[in-house]
Structure formats: structure tokens, C-alpha cells
Length: 540
Ligand SMILES: *[C@@H]1O[C@H](CO)[C@@H](O)[C@H](O)[C@H]1NC(C)=O
Ligand SMILES: *[C@@H]1O[C@H](CO)[C@@H](O)[C@H](O)[C@H]1NC(C)=O
Ligand SMILES: *[C@@H]1O[C@H](CO)[C@@H](O)[C@H](O)[C@H]1NC(C)=O
Ligand SMILES: *[C@@H]1O[C@H](CO)[C@@H](O)[C@H](O)[C@H]1NC(C)=O
Ligand SMILES: *[C@@H]1O[C@H](CO)[C@@H](O)[C@H](O)[C@H]1NC(C)=O
Ligand SMILES: *[C@@H]1O[C@H](CO)[C@@H](O)[C@H](O)[C@H]1NC(C)=O
Ligand SMILES: *[C@@H]1O[C@H](CO)[C@@H](O)[C@H](O)[C@H]1NC(C)=O
Image 1: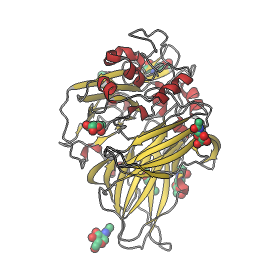
Image 2 (image 1 turned 90 degrees about the vertical axis):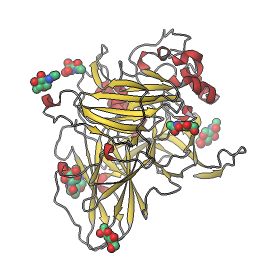
Image 3 (image 1 turned 30 degrees about the vertical axis):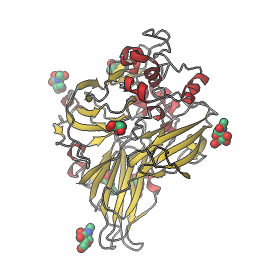
Image 4 (image 1 turned 180 degrees about the vertical axis):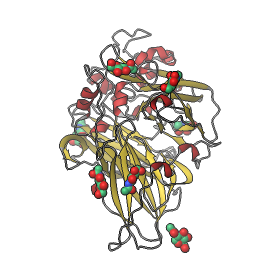
């Protein structure tokens, strides 16, 4: 890691630059003790070491692509305010970095701080291991604590993502998607071989818990200790007492924990990987991983009789109060979405949030927004399957997502934190023997998240202000669901974007090198001529 200090001449940013050299390439790894497989790592390392920077820093990542396919990187939860073209979402804000090429990401933290992660954002490469934690340390701690522990959670599959996808959801898969039972990794290793965490009596610890999962949920608890939630997805909250965290793919939580005052016992922490839509099979699902909290080498371990999950208090986002006390935003417009499935004429099952399953356009949507002049304000130019919603600068949007099916989702919005306003019942839970959900509504200062857990048979209402010109993907964090089409894009204030930002030449060159057009509408044409744009293609 190289540190540089930048002194901006006109006094805007007196920030430190942290520079990383990342050679993204394949390697063979055994992460579970059961199988060796090809994975995508950085500088021949797996797990990729976590990145620690300070609030206000500028992170530059010099990427060299040693893969035989394109790649791109996204820092999950950072807002890319003023630099939407650095967001990394494949075929949304950039073409992939071609094999053998280099590209430098410049990522401003501005005033953001908290727990984030960096991941591949091209063709499911996140699922093949291209991911690590990004901790942006606060200039002032959001709560008092003595030490920090990082817990990263991963689901890890024997098959590479493109292979798995072809089996689960390829032509001729004939809707036979089978449940699979991945392994759980904690801090990059088999969940049960994780290092012991040492506690000193009387000290206070901050745990940062990050989920890199591509399908599975994790429950985190530390029986015998109380967790106080202080941060969710890079937004600080007033301390909120819980017994455990229920973490959907992509989410992050920080909790503070008071150590006991005596070292007469040791304890265990519990990371249980599960998904409600994966059948329960003893030993396979859920998978329970236990790690040691050690107060003293010689002390006995104290176990607690397992309570059933319903008796424990799990974190509930609508009950949290953000430290920033942002009041409930008054709504200007609504976007209504539904999580639905349909069987395509191509013999492939598709998922969607909007009217059609999302599919990558032939030109990255951001490039259309930059190059189509006044027409950039018209959603028609982005093509039907970009599911583009054009937003006016500074309008407050309420997204209503209806999820009437027996499937949980974890939806991630690039470029924003959303106010999590309300959850309520949807669909016919009773016909699936599920209880009908009760209404859950945030108070006067709704908590903000970037990755929201949408339970089965519930709707959710989320709000945000369109104060970040750019093109932002709103997607299911489950890689398989994204590839089945579960995404839409927000084209935010393209008029302001064209005035305030300039698309770097290097990014256009990257497309042209791969014979992808770098301007025009979704088909690379002028006006509303979308000829050449076919329906239902692979997303990146
Ligand atoms: C690309 O990056 C690699 C690895 O960091 C470096 O060796 C090479 O010189 C770079 N190539 C160019 C053209 O900058
Ligand atoms: C440890 O002792 C201090 C001082 O007596 C007390 O305030 C605190 O609540 C105790 N902590 C626990 C976890 O019992
Ligand atoms: C992890 O270890 C615990 C305690 O030995 C055991 O009950 C559990 O089944 C193990 N988990 C897995 C997934 O092997
Ligand atoms: C671990 O947590 C899971 C989920 O809350 C629970 O079902 C299981 O009983 C716990 N196991 C232990 C040993 O605490
Ligand atoms: C898709 O087809 C399969 C197999 O025929 C069927 O079980 C399923 O209900 C269909 N799904 C939808 C959404 O129509
Ligand atoms: C919901 O399920 C119940 C029980 O199976 C059934 O009686 C009812 O007709 C269903 N309602 C709808 C709207 O599908
Ligand atoms: C982006 O920056 C502008 C100008 O500082 C600010 O008004 C806006 O709230 C920021 N948007 C986000 C999402 O941080």
C-alpha cells in the first residue's frame, strides 16, 4: 500500500491518497478442505486482504486484468458522488477492463465512513472470490470502544459462477433450478477453523460484520453477551440492543459488545448460514459455524441452551434511529416495482423487478446518458430491458417493491442510501402456510441502508433524494437473481450529469477496443432507433 499526500491547489481537497496495485487473476484454492477450484484473486492471494483507509481518503486501485475475460470493480456502499463513471457496474457505467489491460479506479470517500466492501462487478466475478472488506475508519469514532474485530461472511460453491449459472438457468435448464448447499467461510476460511477472538475483561469491542454472500443469509450471535448495533451499511445509528444479527447478502453491521468483568469463562460466537428458500437438511442447511471468544486459556467454555430463534431479539431496521437524524423525506414521485418470475420463450426462467427482466444494453447506460443530449431525459433511448427510470435532479423518489412470492431478496442500490420507511404484507402467505406479515413502519427519522432485506410475501417502501447525478443500478444482491434479470436502472438527472461531469476518454477507449460502441442510445444508434438490440441477453 502506497500513501501519497495530495495538496489541492484550489484548496478543495486536502486529502490523502491510498494507492493499491491489484493484479486480478485466476488461482487454484482449497478454502474448505473438501475441494480445490479455480477462483479469482488479487496478486495471487485468496482471501484478498481487507483494505483499511481513513474517512476523507482517496483510494486509487491500479487494476491489471490477468483474466481471459473482462473485469470491473465496485466499492459496495460508496456513493461515487461526482464520479459516477468510476462506479464499476458492468455495462451500466463502464465496459469491462479487457484482458491484459490496466485501469485505475479513483474512489473518493468524501465524508463517508464505516464498513464497505470491494467486489468484482462483471459477470458474477464476485461469486468467484473477487471481493474483500473495505473499512473506512471514522475521524471520530461513532461510539466508544477499545478494539475492533472484522468478521467477513461468504458462501462458497464448488462450481465457477458461469458454469453454475449455465446449469441452474441456462437454455434447456427447463426451470429445474436445484438448491445447492454452499460452504460458509468466515474471514476467508472454513467457518469452523476461524481464529479465536481474545477478550480482555472490562474492555469494549466493535465487531464489523460484512456479508459477501451471493445467495445465503447469515445469523450472527454471541450467546452470553449483548450486541449494540451502532452502524448499518456505513450509516451510524443510536446504539440498539439485540441478541443477534440476521444479515442478507451484501449488508454490513457494526455492533459493540462489552466483555464480562471476569475471565472465569470462555464463550462462543455463532455464524449460522441459511436461506429460507433452501430446504433444511441436517448438516447441509443451515450450516452452523462456531468460533471461540477466549478470556483465558485455562477457563472452561460456557455454553447456553439453544433458544429457538423466535425467542431472540434480532435487529429490525425500522426500529433503528440514524445518528444523522435525517427526517422522513416528502415524496415527489413513486416507482412501483414487483419481484416476479416468468418463463421465457427462450426456455429460461427469468426474474424481474420492472416490466421486463433486466439485460445489459449494447452501450453502457451511463454512456448513453452522457452522449444523447436532450434525449437522455427520455427513458425510451435506453432500451426496454435496461428498465431505465429517468429522475429529475433533487426529486424525492419513493420505491415500492412488492414481493408476493415465497422468496427473500436483498436489494442493493448503487449511488444512494435509502430511507427504509415501511414493510407490510403482500401476496397470499396463508396459502403457503406462512404467517401474514404485520405492518412495520419507521419512526420520524428512518434508518438508511444501501442493501435492504425484502422478506417473502412482503412489500417495502424506500425513499431517496435524486441528489447524485449518474446512472445507478438497483439490483438483487443474489448473483443468480441479477443474472435472471432482477434489476432496474435509475438514470439520475442526465441534464445535470452532462454539465457537471466528463466521461474519461480512457473509458470510451476500453469499449472501442472490445468493439462496443461508446456513444448513442442502448443500441449505439441515434434517436429512438434501437435496431440491433435483441431481447433477453446475458447481463454483466
Ligand atoms: C499494467 O500493469 C502492470 C502490473 O501492474 C504493469 O507491469 C504494466 O507496466 C502496466 N502496463 C501499462 C501499459 O501501464
Ligand atoms: C463491569 O463492571 C463495571 C464497573 O463496575 C460495570 O459498569 C459494568 O456494567 C460491568 N460489565 C459487565 C458486562 O457486567
Ligand atoms: C462446526 O462445529 C460445530 C461444533 O463442533 C458443529 O456442531 C458444526 O456442525 C460444525 N459446522 C459445520 C458446518 O461443519
Ligand atoms: C447458532 O445459531 C442458530 C441460529 O440462531 C441456532 O439455531 C443454533 O441453535 C445456535 N447454536 C449454538 C450452539 O448456539
Ligand atoms: C414455469 O414452468 C414451470 C415448469 O413447467 C412451472 O412449474 C412454473 O410454475 C412456471 N413458472 C411460471 C412463473 O409460470
Ligand atoms: C389465498 O389462499 C387461501 C388458502 O389456500 C385461498 O382460500 C384463497 O383463495 C387465496 N387467495 C388468493 C387471492 O389467491
Ligand atoms: C452529492 O454531492 C452534492 C454536492 O455536495 C450534495 O448536495 C449531495 O447531497 C450529494 N449526494 C449524495 C448521495 O451524497
